[in-house]
Amino acid sequence: MPRAERTRGPDPDDARIFGPRHLDTLRAAVSELSWLLGRGYAEPSARKLVGDRHQLTARQRLAVAQCACGDDALASRRARRLTLPELAGRALRVDGFNCIITLEAALSGSPLFVGRDGAWRDLARVRGSYHPVAATERVVALTGEALAAAGCREVEWCFDRPVSNSGRLKRLLLDAAEAAGWPWTATLTDGTDRVVADAPDVVASGDSWILDRPVPWIDLPAAVLQASGSPVWCVAMSPG
Image 1 (cartoon, rainbow, N blue to C red):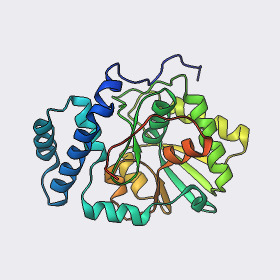
Image 2: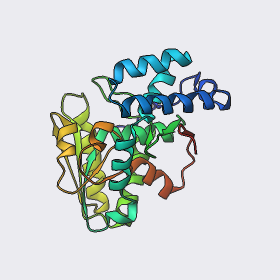
Image 3: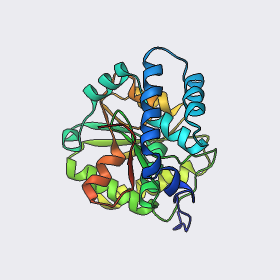
Image 4: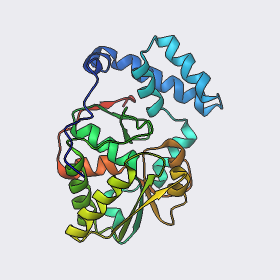
């Protein structure tokens, strides 16, 4: 895959709408949406109610939705979350686009949002087509180094088959793994969320639906970025 010149950099308005002046409002919105979700309110209507109440922009609404969860979900996720050293000797199944794109966004200077569950999430989206960016090869290298240092026994990357260029990204990862001696495999899947959630051991994802399945999980982007010491623009979306 040729080196790309694209980035997943921030939206021009991000510094303002996620700046200090708006943080109290955003955190209040996360708390309110979490309260509603924990009491069984339908997510679409709850998101609209909270977003309208605080007059949030579309990107602010997306960030709030990414970071909210009810109390039961929060307790369950916290109980099953693993750290990088806890991967030693274990098998990891990775939600490929979810983790790769979050890392690309972070290394491109976009904000990451720390939710109630502590997971780091981005606002980038793949809409049927994936394109590598300038940070992609560095993302792969940093991830491989972090997982190798942790002693992860095997890593299986899963990518959505219908997304164009998924096969090229798969080949990039496998070529890097072969060159470095990392124990990686990669597959193209239909219904990647379910495939990842059915992992026999540990999953790596920031997808809320996956994190609410009864499986141990790791926030791979956060772990990789912290292990590498890379500077990251993090926005804490929950009080405390």
